[in-house]
Image (tube, rainbow, N blue to C red; front, top):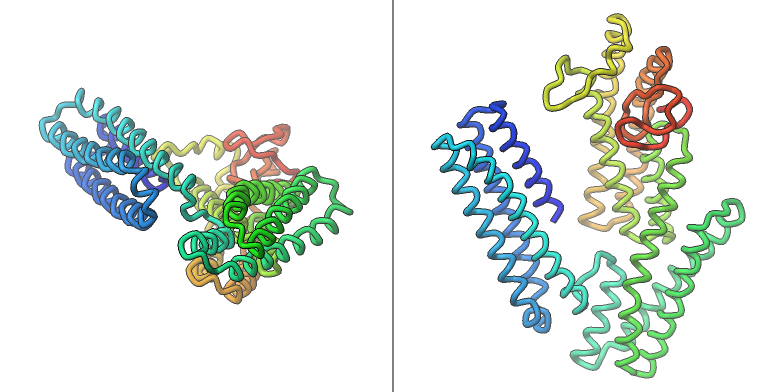
Length: 406
């Protein structure tokens, strides 16, 4: 639903811009058509996903109402687009504003219907976001349908148990130097999950299908908890880092841990998303600095702290940073390919390319931070905003400010 929600916010912003006469009629109508096309693509993706999941006959039968509600929500969206265009052409601003409220209602209805369908899919053991858990569930389904594949299930849970034991060994060593509650909680989670895996293995050897089903139902909760704790640990290590772009260090560390079997795939992918968000934030800051106006809601008031000479000097730093970002973005191709191919060699190549490209970014970033310190400012490591030295958290994103900033 993330894509639909993002498009919804953008469309509401476009409606507000038109009402405020920031864009003309023809641009607005063109934007409406773009959003309609984006919604159409989202509907196709949603339908394909539902069709795939509803290959499970039990889910197809149980989710008839939710599927109908999803289709009705899409129809309401399209009707709203048509009405909005009519009101634009007739210059009816009152009803254009009302259509903004209806867009929010359509989005809420679609979100609720999709979430209701997703809950039933989870209850009826549709695919999860954890690949190894999906493999175990698939083995269980084969047993339920054909009463065969017990050996395959036993092998799958044994392999996962060995992976968890490796994670425990790593965390126990880590716990000797870092007394963190997240480590203890993660150790407990892995140990409890191993007990469930052992119970599944025993039941598989005994061909006890009810016990297999009962124990596998418990696994999803352990995977979700382990994923959450892993992310909390990564963020805690990230917050304590004083190096430039610590999200990159975090991604490389997660990549190594994944290749060595210490974290699950989802932890790696979410760390990758955090790094991409950081890059986007840096680019926004560069755009904000190079922009001379406050268009698009950009707050440029912090520029008043710099003289013309200092601003010219910092413009050179931002140009270097913008140039240095390109090879970093190029290195992400390896991670994107890994998501499609799941080839660990691609992660290693991505790590090497990322390390190499980061070196060119450190110097201009350091120079910008030093320029900020000259006027009593500390630059936020998360969003790049310049803050007074006496602040403990960023005025823009509320992140904890580190001494020396970036």
